[in-house]
Length: 197
Length: 373
Image 1 (cartoon, each protein chain N blue to C red):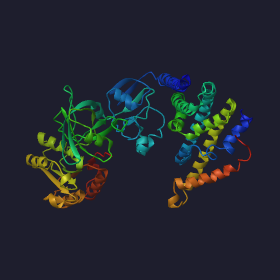
Image 2: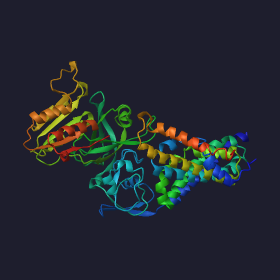
Image 3: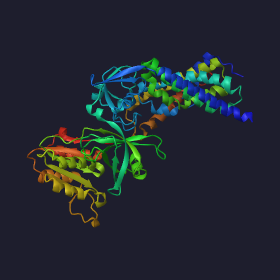
Image 4: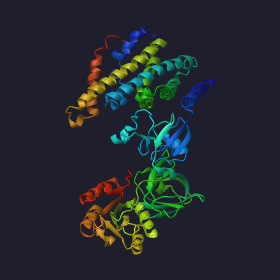
């Protein structure tokens, strides 16, 4: 029973009200470590959006045309991971060949994304919430954009914080965690608007 | 029964399918056809298949750019000047390149993919670099943590090198080490011996290559050596050589000294060699150096212990090697012909020696060293 939420609404919901980073806290490792520079965070965010959209669609097809008909849902975890890894590999090769400029901005982040839990997390949400194809597409893309938005905001804040006197013990990850906390609080303000299940 | 099989079969089948797609994509997408690499504006033209990193493509053609990590972009050794436009520097290259190198189009050859005809510049000496499958002829324990390993080249092969150069030892995967790694070691053998390569290898606690040499390597084993590399050599000037080494830093100097003694090179040159160790148990080659002093009257060997133990019965110099060096420059060695510095050892020792030497008026451009770190 697919929830009756409109894909467009779901798109906005996944960007703002249930942001995959700031309300579900998925993909934290790269969120903290790659957010020192605004430029690389944009690259990583784009790569996550790109991979998340494509893998959400592919995994939806795999889920409804292979996993469920064959009744092997207990293997969905491992199958999703394999699909994500393979898709990232193929994408990396294609981007390298077709768009060297895009490769330059995404290239080195793509392999990192294979193990980004935001990707697997979003796909598992798609599974347990029984999204339709369009909903999955909207949710995958929206979650990616949400992740991009959150990391770009964080990087912009961190670049400013760098220039200010931070107590020695809080430098680096310490102050970053506090900033993320504030950001999550701010995003929490959106949360009553749309209920995503 | 079939219920148990479906799951594994489907996931295996899916994996195989995806692997197939990857292989096919790789074949189609990564096929850049036949391209050529032009080295040193026409000196050498190599027709190659495109698609692989420059480092591997060159190695396939018998040109071995030094690399310690084997092409994973973690050592920064495989620098090559690429004259053709291959796009801006990748973020993976930037940490290893200075602003001057970036401006001069120096790239890490393991990160640059060969996609079209390339023009590159390489030091001529690299054309001489070969890969040898050498047999371990002997292993001698010099101290409790330094081994002298002698490699014999295959019957039909020889090596040409200048004293002071190094080779890369290829360490195969062992125990928990899953990847082959390469490490650079200065050759301690005489260049006149074209059939052997001798290395001095000190056990570094936790070191991948040194642990392998000290615990796994046996006489009779075959290992891969790539070389010779490096610009460290004796300069043909009348200036007095001030050599400083510690531990396995002995290697290039042993090679240089025996080379000088055998061929009576640079007859004008005085040679002072300061060798530092902690205590007697870290000291080696004392007899060999004493014998060399007899053969070569212009050579002076100054071994020094920084922490002599009471039962060492040490008669020689004591103190940190840089202090000994400073004392000798100020009081004993004549500066009539000027000084040249030659250093081999840990980065810490090299930096400390550069400080002492420059403070004594030796220009930094005349202090030579290979920094392995």
